[in-house]
Figure 1 (tube, helix red, strand yellow):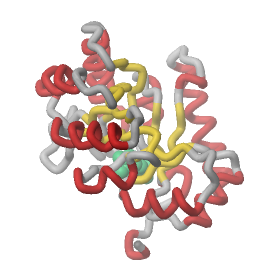
Figure 2 (cartoon, rainbow, N blue to C red; figure 1 turned 180 degrees about the horizontal axis):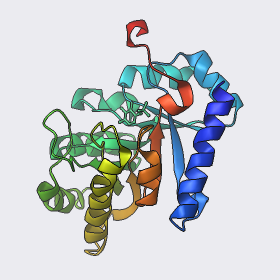
Figure 3 (cartoon, helix red, strand yellow; figure 1 turned 120 degrees about the vertical axis):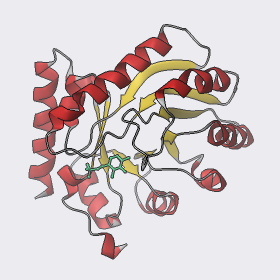
Length: 231
Ligand SMILES: *Cc1c(COP(=O)(O)O)cnc(C)c1O
């Protein structure tokens, strides 16, 4: 079951890359395993999955301790400042940096561990009130300030597109995120490289790949529906 689902996602990413004239190796598939038990992740691991995305600190920490060391863990959910210390040495990339204060906390924790933390800035491209993320017009200012931090590497941008019936409706959102990243990259700010565009979920990852996504975050498409009652 999972094997077929995973193959299906892989095939769709490959086809989207082909349509866009991109190389498949430019896109990383992040298996979003939130709410799923460790056995399910182990099954995915057995199928070759090595990059997992989680949205809760405690869950990421528990799964990190229970699963093999060669897994790359990505923090994709809203992060509270008081919890940064638990994942600073476990998450390879934090996708959800949505304020200067959060960036400051990550900088401090990274300094304590003598590491450089890799982060993406989450942008609320669609300006949804229910969503986290900095507004597009705030991006320049936050980027400039973070450039002065010695233990942070900004690797790119992330967005969570609205839920839509037809994924085509999100094409403009993805194109806008790419445009923002190109604009920032052209300014050549220190500590800043805009190589990652994290966008696209089960519903719309093919459109996101066509619009330049370098990371797609797919949960349901690989693991099936989530049962929040179990959590
Ligand atoms: C849950 C989640 C996903 C995956 O959603 P699916 O629709 O199940 O693919 C992707 N990104 C973030 C930030 C999420 O919280």
